[in-house]
Amino acid sequence: MLLSKMAAEGGGKEMNEIKTQFTTREGLYKLLSHSEYSRPNRVPFNSQGSNPVRVSFVNVNDQSGNGDRLCFNVGRELYFYIYKGVRKAADLSKPIDKRIYKGTQPTCHDFNHLTATAESVSLLVGFSAGQVQLIDPIKKETSKLFNEERLIDKSRVTCVKWVPGSEGLFLVAHSSGNMYLYNVEHNCGTTAPHYQPLKQGENFAVHTCKSKSTRNPLLKWTVGEGALNEFAFSPDGKFLACVSQDGFLRVFNFDSVELHGTMKSYFGGLLCACWSPDGKYIVTGGEDDLVTVWSFVDCRVIARGHGHKSWVSVVAFDPYTTSVEESDPMEFSGSDEDFQDLHFGRDRANSTQSRLSKRNSTDSRPVSVTYRFGSVGQDTQLCLWDLTEDILFPHQPLSRARTHTNVMNATSPPAGSGGANPGSNGNSITTPGNSVPPPLPRSNSLPHSAVSNSGSKSSVMDGAIASGVSKFATLSLHDRKERHHEKDHKRNHSMGHISSKSSDKLNLVTKTKTDPAKTLGTPLCPRMEDVPLLEPLICKKIAHERLTVLIFLEDCIVTACQEGFICTWARPGKVGLLPSQNQANSPSGTVV
Image 1: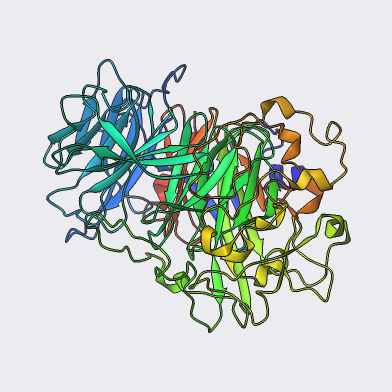
Image 2: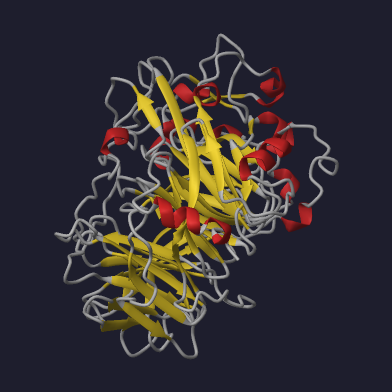
């Protein structure tokens, strides 16, 4: 039924045909062929062996009312255009800036939204050989090159982002598994940096640069094993979600460099992550072909979604379709009293989604809540998903989850653990499912600091020592469970590594290979039958090559594929000012 519906909506009967429109409850989304951006010659890029096409947006707030700017990389080339979106046709003959690099390729980029003006923008560009360049495409200036001699890290830059609320701090992740904090005002030095430990925990370590004079990098993070594929700041800028090739999501308090919680993929590496607009949920995607929804407050998986037929390359929330209706304000991430902040002179970021940023389930849950998010993958498909109230706040216990309920005695949580219900500091529950048999309280009503999967420990550590650092699942839960993994988990060999048990945040980083089956069935990685399985609202083939970009804007959705075509999908009722041209070009409205 789903397949026939997909074919009917797309206007074709062959599943292999590329769709140019799709319908959801909001109405019809339509591909605008005249708003397609690419290299000026519009020739499909031969993407063999090249880095993923990425897209960055910034609004420069100019007086014309057309302040959106677009940057994208294709192979060795980097383009900077005025983005006209659904309003006018793209003029590919007039890029504001174009750069062609030799010997290295751009891999990722990010605009500083805080400092952008019509006269100047700060754009960071990461490269395949490890360097990071700061350029101003409006002034056509190249102001600085970081890690120029590759003394800091020689591996590919996987993700680069400005620190929210900061004019000069930025974070860079590499395929080495390391992440570095830079200040644009500081130099990198002429020798390789020397480091001294600042904080160490379960499978992560943070070092400061040991130098007589201040130099870059300010901090070096070593996270997990294998490449650090992507990181994302929470909407308030306080927390950092990292996904790695070892299959782990790790969420840190950025200023205090404390580990808040963690999650393991079903198998394989995690490739992408994003936060819900209110900071309550993180969605990840990766090599298990799944999207996984993780609760920030409860530190556990609450749902998985299966719709892709290959690796999921990008996940993103749609803040314009997400809706939350309730009355109680919220501080979702607790107070800063417990943390020893390392501000490095940055201002605290404000959430861009202010209407969703202060929500709570302390005494009353939302009257109505729906989170919309999307995903694109190497299967060339776009999936849209709704995360609804029945998943977030289940009323009836799931009988299938009862064998995985683990009751443990939680110590008193640190101050500021928002979301605690009266009496919930006694017996706390950690369950891979989303419910617990009565009369025990549901785990989604517990404080996040007491619930961050510490129920999987064979002995509960002292809460005064923990303070949210190592209160996440270790690997002792499997000792108390009977399970047969081979029939449930056919790709055990593809799982990554995770660390051995550690009950003290000061323990050194210990990296040991772990049997993947030992994490399956624990709160770290629930079995498929233990959490709700989402089905996509729509699942459409929209490109010939693997998809690498998904961005939700107010009047459109932007996607891009590895052939170098950046496509604009008008939201319902936002088709734009060129209906005649759009109809005339409709046969070529597919990505060719």
